[in-house]
Image (tube, rainbow, N blue to C red; front, side, top):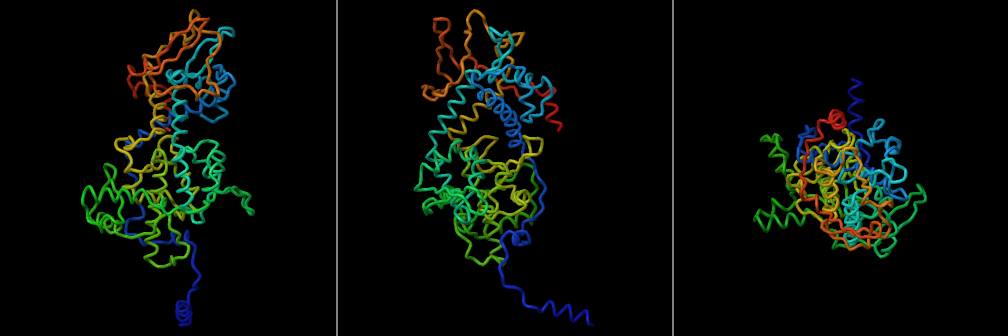
Length: 459
């Protein structure tokens, strides 16, 4: 009897009225009717995209090695040690053999004096780098707007500079964005050092109401005008497109229909003054987290970003702790791919922005980056590489190595059809860059039997 009275007395005690932090509320929330645990259903369109990008990432690392040299060339014998230093997972002599798989990006030639094999970038690869740089500079005003919207989504109107620096490529920011964007526009941004942590932060100077419009709101307006849907059905809904093979039962369909009608606060709205302890507030905050990740992906250049980089903004944007499980609850809106880095990298795609592995509304920077992937996937069967793996010709080649100069951006080059003229021994020769680019076909399966690709696929 004493045990019963002590138990009931504890139940009747008034609970503390102090509000709990939102992170703990999200962890304990059971408000949504959509099942918390969802099995992953793979979408091969996105997975194949990441498999191709896996090769591109390795090629980019080798490119940075070559371009970091004063002459922008490297002897073949040095690639093994440099690749091991970068942790690319190559054994002895495998790094040099890996370069031979991409003859449209890397050119191997015999040095006329040292008589050893060197590697440099091809004219097509140099032109792709130049086009990407031009596209990056042309979209700089849009990148400033994206950064303003990104900082406006934070709770306090500030983000850590290091977190933005890590994700600068996804948001289309240049490497020196601290000076070329933040300090260049003091009317938009303020850079300061925190006293407690000594970290640099980017702070928005003034919130612009015209920028506080999410991309999903424009999509809803388009869907309402084009398809004539009911206003109540479209008001708070998201575009849902489940992957092939995803099982949708009767009760799950009803749960999604109910969730689509749940109202929520905008990611740009300050919710610090709201009472977040009620069940209705929990539902709104959970859907607000979906809208925040949706808007974050919409601000990227390629409508994708790694899960680890989204986690950097978790505290600043009120995102849940278990991001991966949270995204798997909404597989019709997002797709989480584990391909591309032996399962260690999780890439989040915005499903509505892609169709059959291609961006529906591509931009110039996306197209310039895709050209490197096209060079990587070009067949090596028709590449001009002789039996000794030497492209050096004693009768026509010059002794000096053609390299990228710091002023390469001043060249009037617009596409792969531009012809270069190089002075060779007092005479000028013309080289057309589209001579073998269009005629080559993509052969995605020719390297599957090689030992390197088998090793990567089995890991």
